[in-house]
Image (tube, rainbow, N blue to C red; front, top):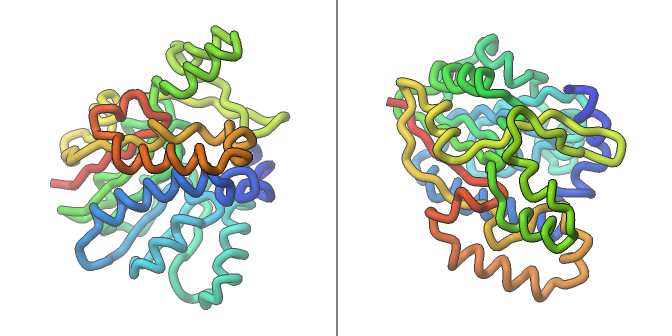
Amino acid sequence: MAREFDAIAPVYDQTFTHTATGKCLRERVWHFTAKILSQQPGKALELNAGTGEDALWLTQQGWQVLATDISPDMLLMAQHKKAAAGIPQDNSPFFQTLALEELDKLKDSGFDLIFSNFGGLNCLNLEALRQAGAAIAQKLKPGGHCIAVVMSRFCLWESLYFLVKGKFFGIFRRLIKGPAHAPLNAQTSVSTWYYSPRTASQILRGEQLVQNNCQPIGFWLPPPYLESFFAERPKTLFILHWLEKHLAPAWVSPAADHFLIHFTKK
């Protein structure tokens, strides 16, 4: 899977991070994360860190961040961002190549926060996700936080989009048994498992994690693949962003493109 993500590393920020929809979606993640992490910053582990956007933000909030990803090329882009931001190489964030399935092999532990954004955990099947949950609990301090942004098993926006397009199979593509093949670009796709908030909570929490809340990410805001449409309609996107901020209660999380789920360790 490293090869697939290496292939999109040079254009990932251009096609998602720095897009209008990408910025709006990440703003919502940061909003909820900042509310949860109101205590003194500590030691953070980021999973599937990509090009380091969240790692740099956490560092700016005072966290000491170890950012990991399966893709060396993604982390190379993150290193370039760190240098461009004027952060010395011996300062946080630190970067390490690590697959999600290898989390239990990470020597470091005692984290106050483990963070995974934008569907990295959806690259894991049920058993691998359960093992990741156990490893997360092992690496967290008692009272530590796990915040994960997971792609939902049902997305209202996506269903309406495929209905309008007359692509009826697409309406149900997240509901199939087994993995879906989610495109990264025109040539590359990855096996992806979609989870409802309830299922994700049951699998991840195990015996040591307690779920605190779940929030929608992308109920009113459109999925990133509709960027070309909404980039030309900034007023419409502004309205949808306002609705996402003010009229997206927790109970709509199962119908959002992603949901943010928060656990603490007992």
